[in-house]
Length: 169
Image (cartoon, rainbow, N blue to C red; front, side):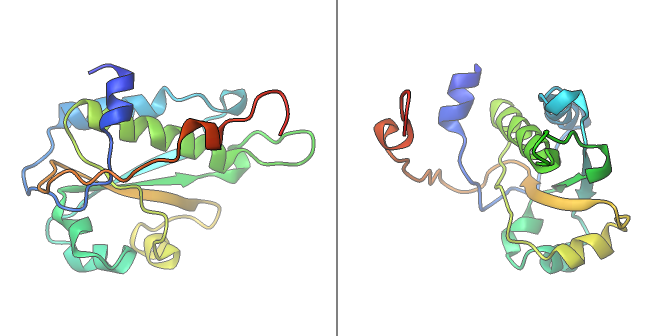
């Protein structure tokens, strides 16, 4: 699947088969995130891979939806702000870099037949506690990773002319 097909095919999966994800596919998805561009190539993100089997209650503490733990894996993208590039006006690029990497991960998962669902409304304190994150590490987003078990329900998108401006606002 080429990148444009992956972009068109990606949707938020909210139902997963219990089938395991092979290490080979997981590595492909993680490698896509590693290859993502980051400001000044600082790569201030990390990905915590969590196997969900036997940890369903813990996953519910992250995000209280049963479908999160249906997937065999949950990937949590975190940032290490002290490693990030800072723009001259003071803007820190850790979260920008992490979300670019996360998007690469999501598109790669789609390309290899896996489902994801970008989750941002999670309990950061629970994630911090259950993953034993150091104080200087911040969780940014998480996604289940597995084989979709529901019909595709891709939501609509605004037309391009509502999103793009040329030359000036």
